[in-house]
Image (cartoon, rainbow, N blue to C red):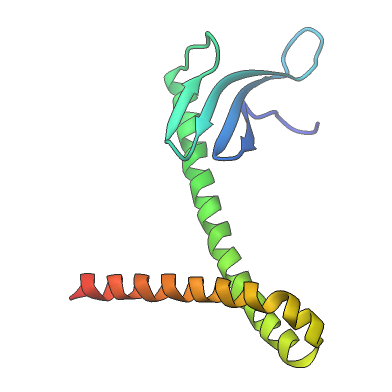
Length: 134
């Protein structure tokens, strides 16, 4: 690997990450990674792995990663919604101009139910917002 190694490596997984301390300064000049913690974003938990005691520096680095990760996931979620709008537009165009009767029969019920569900959620959320605002 070129350049300096980071002090920590975060192996992302559903709802968090495994945290490893990276060591490249050993006698064999091999990269060694020792797991030091488990992060659960959904629960907001950071647990030391095994007998390891987390230092304030470890906790600070993990805290910074958690903040950065949450911001990245929020951006991705918003981007997904923008792509969903594009996909809905593409679906409408496909249904109008390219889909065969058999293809429409195969997807219409599922699409209508999904859109009905989405519309209900959006209307309810808008109504809740308007009632909060006055």
